[in-house]
Image (tube, rainbow, N blue to C red):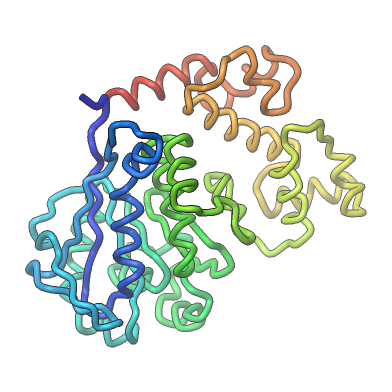
Length: 334
């Protein structure tokens, strides 16, 4: 018997949906805990219960004219762990107009504890429902101007592959949905399961300039290319000895200038960002259950375990050991 419960994923189906985005989401979540186990000759352990929901449970006509039969009526869904809105394949305005009855259901489910995620132009549904007002979001670059014009209350970051605002997630384009799916699978099942899915689906987990994927909780939108260069360097080299002076020399500015620009863009100094990146990586190692506390500090770039433990507790209010126990308990109780 599994030591977790299957998480409930609802994919919203509607006439004019991009068929590949809908079925792709269905596949990647349905085969989590299945494909990897089959390849290794182990018993399958599906981690998600995935259903497609449409208005009145009616058949869905995709933008490529493929007809799909959903599993249920969206009106029957009272709660779920994750609500997914796939890409709009036809004219955005046409699809929104023809599916306006969906909006109250999105608003209703947004009032629950569910995570909500959209892919590409699916973000228009969330914006129409008011779910994205005052929040960071992204969509396909080709829709960016229209999105900004139609929904000025949304903080659109069209250059980002994936964004997160509390429990609301958005992916930029068709292929960016893989990044979002891996992020969400890691959120629910841990780094190990997410890595298994990436391997079985042959997905590169660090594609393009998608720096927000590995450190999405630290992401702050800004346009300072110098600061972004330093951020990228830190994220790629955090296990090595790093100093603010070294980073400042790398981009030909003084340490004072680097501190000032970093603070303005990221709301923290470079040394604090280095520490935050290391803490985030340490949390993932602890969540995997495959690291000893003794070796943890060294794996994230610290020589002194007691010093690192103090930093970790300051950031999480838990010692590394307490954090690991809490995560394992949470995973076993699902």
